Length: 140
Image (tube, rainbow, N blue to C red):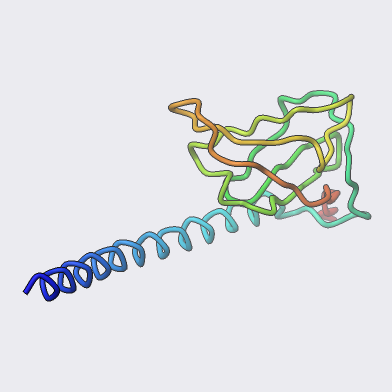
């Protein structure tokens, strides 16, 4: 009798966990789709204009923009540099990136982590791909 109750309890627990995980995965997919649309809107009217760079010079760090669940964008004159995160789930709405830079450039290999906006606790490590330059497409 105890074996049957234990088996039923385990089966109900597994079923409940699966039922909770499926909507979370669907919600995560929706967040990623929404973020990709936001990224597409960001680069609309811009075109890739050169080779990716592992480091960029950032004179004004407050221009660094976080694109949720995608990566970073930094506008410098007529160029916008975009670096996609290798683990974009660590750039959620409540995650704040902390970048330990070494020198005047922002590099993809700089030490980066995220902290939760409300608690200030560590929420993940952050890894970037190279910075890709985009330039405005001429309208005429």
